[in-house]
Length: 277
Length: 250
Image 1 (cartoon, each protein chain N blue to C red):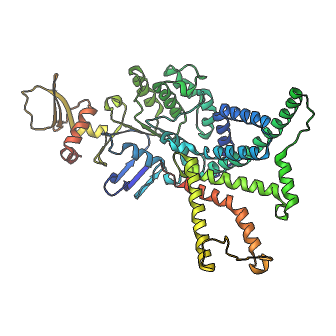
Image 2: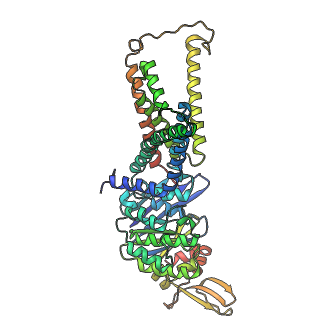
Image 3: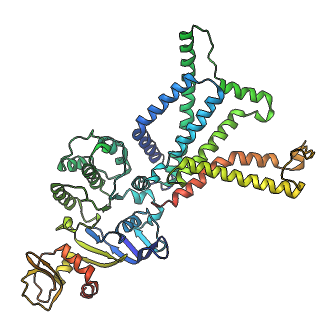
């Protein structure tokens, strides 16, 4: 669905935004794009949607060149940005105005998602809603568009705790084998048990891109005693509950993926982790 | 699916404008109506139409001044051409029709109200058009002054429409500065030509008598060139706006 080859993007020679980036993403999966602030996650999403243009390399989305911004491509992409636009419309009118641009939009689904998010009043003005409420409306709209590609930049920012759970449920239910969802976040806990594939950006490059099943096959996540010596430990975090560790899964044991721990392990020990895959 | 231009998508973009800006539009046209009820002086009316016109045109792509707004606009599934045509229709044709309607209605109501309040018996006059008719009578070059007036208006609107695509913030002031800078460059070229041909920078008190009695025989095709410039200026700025829109990044 998305093929990126040798991508380079910079505003000047000194400040590279993306460097030598290659990536292939398939439909039917929820991809978690993780990285520290300023690593280029949002820029990568903008490149995929055709909002910024690459200086070198190529981007292909569903067979289209994003920078041409053809309507056939745009009607199959929904981008939920971190900062939402100022829209002086009621939810009802927003749907009336923007839904016709998306041929697969489902009004029933939109109402259903809004109900799940406890947004009952469709007559409410979007500019009068809180940031969290507005985000819920946009998430609901994005899911209801049934676009093949859904890009979400920090979607859980501004959502309260129950809404984060609702978000995870709705996203999991809204993705099928034809749909590709990319969620960019630095709040890795919010994506727990939601994503199928983890992409990590570090120093403006993709340093890690693996499906969850591969990760748990190669790595073992555990909480160990401080006296426990294990030669397979790649990364360790000392907490009040003990040592949170990422180890080589030499014994082929099952463990629950800890995304935050994995992310920290990758950013501090990139070479060691990537060597295993 | 039509990949270049679809009237359906154009209709949706126009609908989007009217639904999203209904209150602002109603307020603006109501204010215009009141202004035309009070002002009858053709200079004042003309000034109001020109100024409100370019303010209106310069707001057509002002969403680019705010990154989330620009992203939202560029991601609307419609071609750049459809987005630009929407801007042209609204800033040139829709604006002109509405402002003229306000002028006629405002002028009529204003005159009748004035007659009622001050017990006068004034007839309804639309002095803006009377001025155009007068110009028609004075000079043969104004033989199509209504069209000329529309062309001048369309050129101003197209310049400010380009300004709204080109500049992110302070669109009006930056566009005006660009027009002034262009004027200064033309002025400098003129000075240079004067210096080269007459060895002076001013024709004042120089006793140079230039008479161009028959420009067409001196410069064959000058009229055609003039017409081309006249009719092509607004489309030229629309084309530049189109290319600027296609290369817009947010």
